[in-house]
Image (cartoon, rainbow, N blue to C red; front, top):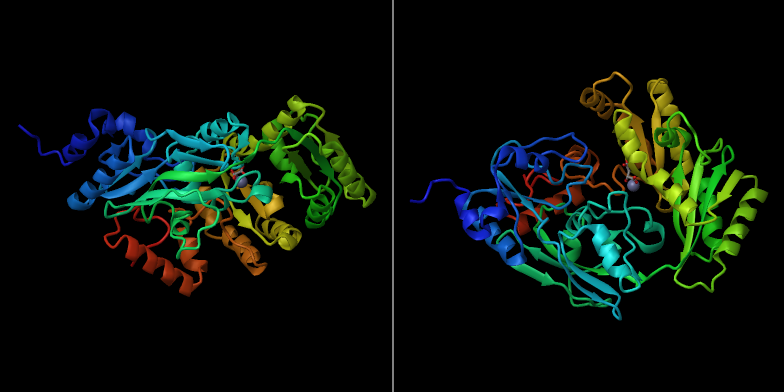
Amino acid sequence: MRSDDPIDVFRDVLGATGVVTSADLVERYVVDHRDLLRGTTPAVLRPANTAEVQQITRLAARHGFGLVPQAGNTGYCGGATPDMSGRQLVVSLERMNRIREVDPLGHTLSADAGVILADAQKAALDHDLMLSLSLGSEGSCRLGGNVGTNAGGLSVLRYGITRDLVLGLEVVLPNGDVLDDMGRLRKNNTGYDLKQNFIGSEGTLGIVTGVVLKLGPKPVARATVWVELAADAPLARMLAVTRRESADLVSSFEYITAPAIALVQGAQPGALKAGPGGALLIEFSSSSTRLPLDDLLTGTLEAMVEAGWVSDALLAQNDRQRAAMWTLRESIPEGEKKAGGSVKHDISLPLGAIEPFLAAAGETVRCYDERLRLSVYGHLGDGNLHYNVLVPPGAERLAFTDLIEGDLSHRLYAIALGLGGTYSGEHGVARLKRDLLERYGDPVRLALMRRLKTAHDPDNIMNAGALVDPA
Ligand code: MLT
Ligand code: ZN
């Protein structure tokens, strides 16, 4: 005899392995990566293919459940965390992890949305190609989440953000239809570019199940330097000089301040230090060994030293030294966690506004409470600063987060907005920044976003509570 468990209809489609309901196994799906949000769900659905996503979407609509798509669950804004209603089912894409095809001539990779980013990078490398999207969380984030959040990372300066890399998408719409837009065309002027609506939509318009990404030739040469900056080094001008002197072969231009470095190095500072103005990690890369990258980098450094912008510099002599530089940079978020956590501000600015922002924000923090410790770093090459306030020792993390976000954060956002910047460069909006979008968003843009959401998802099935409230 059939039970009256409403989840049984999903078991019929997905089988026992496709549905997780036991509390201990569900736990990791209902808490966000930064442990700021906790929800509840009657079941985690783990479809194995697009047809199954289609069926469970139709069933959810019929039985009055909402769906929360979840890829790697590594996002910073709670986009993959269900609410407390008990009416939202998590749809985990983790079993949809097939690389569908690498096209070596077309320079594209087609894959399921549950493929881990590092596995997609590896699949491209196996064909001597490169997937340029690169993030600290690449070992666990998944392509669907990268698309949903329009993820940024360490090489946006040269290759663009996720949006710039997506050629095609497959999306299960809220009514269960499949938008098959998995084309590999670079040029396609046949009307609205609908896939753009889903990139950065944080699962609110449909469930991305497949993606076609642009690849490039694999870099075979790199030149990397760690630069200790002189006081008042003009960051944006240094970037301009670097782009010019490198013939635009610069693929990363990361800014890191001393307190952020200290989070990783602890009490024993190593060879990689900040100068009075902080530090830069600059990398040039090329797919040809014929280009004199080392010369270009030396020339760039000479120009900077001559201008008095550099107090010291360390060129990576081999891959081990290069890796040590990157490990330091990529370990900062983990260092913040170990130090008790941080309140993150993912500031994006026009390049010329970076130094004015740093000056004004520093002064604002000092006036607010001079005891606060900051961890500031970011992807300077694309104007993205992580301006994070560390939770002080002994403070309760969530209470401190509320305190800062209720006051200081708004002062920082006001500075950024006044300089033509914004409060989310690459981390998204989802649940944790929705109030910011409502507070600072242009009303016409907000109204259009609501209309778009309602047109796609009139019953608000997809990730209700994230990004935009249709009401
Ligand atoms: C990073 O660039 O490491 C992250 O996007 C920033 C962060 O964790 O605050
Ligand atoms: Zn970042």
